[in-house]
Length: 73
Image (tube, rainbow, N blue to C red; front, side, top):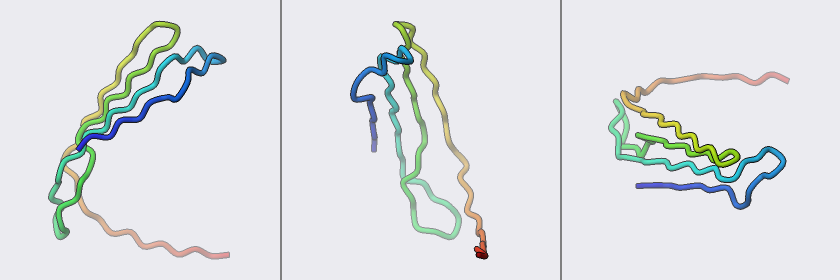
C-alpha cells in the first residue's frame, strides 16, 4: 500500500516549490497482535529554489509495548 502527499501550491515566502512524501506500508506481524499495516519506508522530496533534496527513512523491527497514563486536573 502506498500513500502520497503533495504540497497544493508553492510557498513562495520560503522558496518551497514542491514537497512530496511517499509512504509505503506493509503488513507487519508484531508480537501478540493481529497483523498491522505499518510504514516500511518513507521518502520525502523537497524542491527549494530549484535545488531538490530527498530523504529516505526505513522502518523495521517493530515491537509491542504497553503504556499506562493517568491525567490529573
